[in-house]
Length: 361
Ligand code: DGJ
Image 1: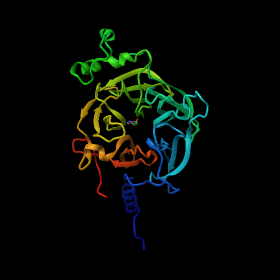
Image 2: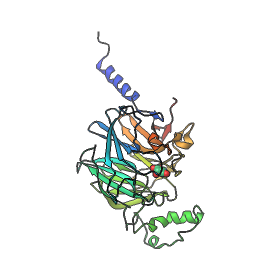
Image 3: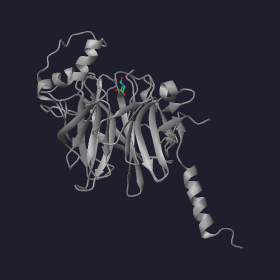
Image 4: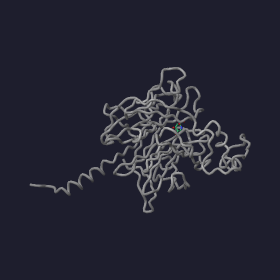
């Protein structure tokens, strides 16, 4: 007896797919060896039907220095993840920019169909300077499993003014030692005090992501100007260099951990505030052009724990046929490798504005 028609089976498989939307709420997330996934501050890339999850391979202890490199896990279904090892190793050579003991955070990989290369961007701090370098590192590989080879690392767009800078704004002068958070300091930050401070050497780049738009153009989105201002910088067609076109978002807004997605022609960005490893309230921004203007909306999280993003800090928003998944890190600064993962579906209100709820366990 035929139990199901083809149509029924199609609906069942669609329902099945919907039910498979991965939701992770801070419980240990074992890989296929039964070990908690050690890939933090990362993101997911899908290539040739395989999901690649790149992230920080975290060692325990202080400071945040790196002993291994960037980790990669693969999955056929977003649920079962196999450890593929370290795809960009730190170097044993003294003086190498990614010498063991440097800091590598928030790695993101994108595929460039024009060059056939996989491009890895990451927040990079030279060994021994804490968070003082504020560099963006770029590495490339012919294979998504690496090895990724460092191309360059450094500040962003040295000598270049942000888009739309008026001539008279280039000559403004401030007392850079003025007290922070005063109205006059806020005005100075808005006017570009720290942007101009860093003009010659290049803009700071700490927490970051990379976004490839529908038209194939890619953008580097990063926390700049002493973590006070988000910048979005256009990348060249190889995705490995900045073009020099960049904008400043929410000067003085103190945003970290940018994660971005686009739906129905609208760009949405979720960020965190800056409280070290401690969670804080997420922020939501939207724009109809990636280079702005951007508009700030209220915290997208709803329900108990919303004021601390349910204990997490944004890292990536992953899109597939089933919708968008908000990925965040529940940091454990004392035992960083045991930082937990938070993956929650992005929902949309009747007004089209995204929101995130923590599901009941
Ligand atoms: C918050 C950032 O989002 C993390 O990536 C990391 O840099 C910590 N700060 C370090 O305190």
